[in-house]
Length: 196
Image 1 (cartoon, one colour):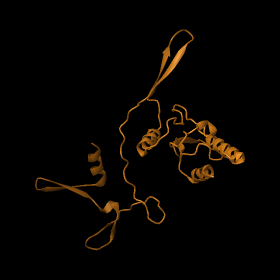
Image 2 (cartoon, one colour):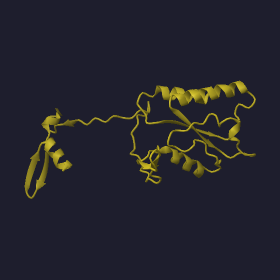
Image 3 (tube, rainbow, N blue to C red):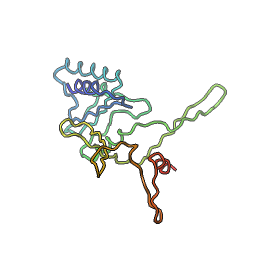
Image 4 (cartoon, rainbow, N blue to C red):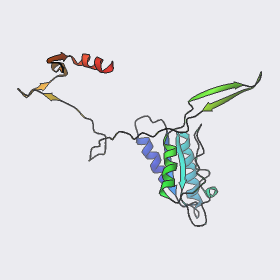
């Protein structure tokens, strides 16, 4: 059922995404052990997700007796081109281990450039160069509306102090004091100075 829910969530998203990924956190290596019909349904749904461009990654936790990927998850996990295998063979028993694995999957690995090495008359080898270390930048905070959890769009309106009337952008000017003189500029002029 979790794969159905993920499929429905991704189908409701209207904006274009660079990649779609579902991370499965579990300590059950055979969740449908007694029910082969449900296991087959899950495998079919995983294949459907893969065909629509949604990739599954397994982040399994340690369990007594070990975690056997071959029982169920080996067929579900998919790989993206130019990316390491979606299966993490080392099970995690600490939150720090899980966070490292999740952060490693956060940024999509793209080749910085590709080199064609000509080894002979009819033999060419292509090599991709990747940046393995990259400084992580904390994203800017996004204000959300409490009721719907949607991003808030801000609108700024300027009012006259004397009359209280709404001012249009063409009614306002920017000024800068140099020496004892106040220099008034149009908004476009101020923007040009900021770009210079």
